[in-house]
Length: 389
Image (cartoon, one colour):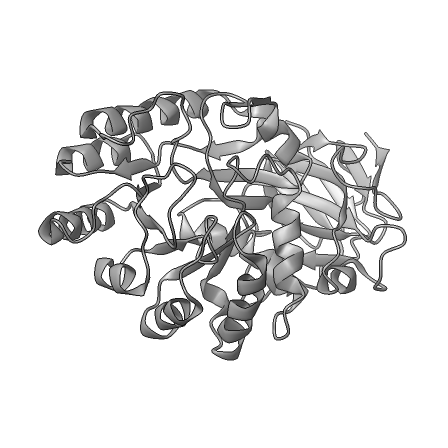
């Protein structure tokens, strides 16, 4: 595997919301890992001049709905994952593989949903479209599951289970068991929050349900697509320590209002970002970039903090090994900059104004997967370039 040196970095975002900026102006990558953050090296197999652009960890979309391969039946679209790569996404986490045609979600069979999680996990473990890491195999929770179901998906490497079609309140002991089993096995518990989904058979969940259930992650708290009342959102903010997911496919107005409250309470470390796509919202290659810009424009949120919500915070939320520019971590990163004609003197200033950034290069595990410019964003004013190889 070729070594990579990146120098002339304008601003480096670490992914760690507690210390989001690094003063390092160069990176050295070896064997697919970050080897040196700030380096005096002058040579490598591949040398990249960042030309003053912003360098961040690869973006992590914490809420996608994959099916198989690089195809989504919900919008009859091919190559959607490859196109998300051109929106800076190097890793995505399934919130349930629920868009398969004919999937009996109105009469859920626990064996079927366990098997679906195992199958999709196995498939995406062996197939990474355009190099994107797809954390598939999120088991959707339905009545009648046993601890053995949770053990099976945990053994397969799945990261998450999700409440979406569950009849809350009908069997409180069972749902409490589900949460306990998941946490004992290292699985994160996510819940579809807010109103009913496109399926029409998901179960609405507001503050009363969520606070009683005690999940790890409140999925698309701003709606997927319909949010719970703002008063319920504020109760969850104030009465729990659950992670709060802001989604592109939700209500953007209430997302900004809620994020002001989160900032005022000093709870930005609890926020992660996702798209909640493919869905009725569509296929959105720039969806995570747009959500990051939306959050970055909220008073009280620094743009570098918004980047961390889409990188390191999402990685911590789902027990992923990426999301940070740190020695020993996988070298997943994005080089991006201000788009010609946009406001702001720097990429972060432009992001703070709510602007999209232009992607120049993307690396996954230290390998260049976008080397000229993104096909889904306008180019940055000055693109990075390879000056030696």
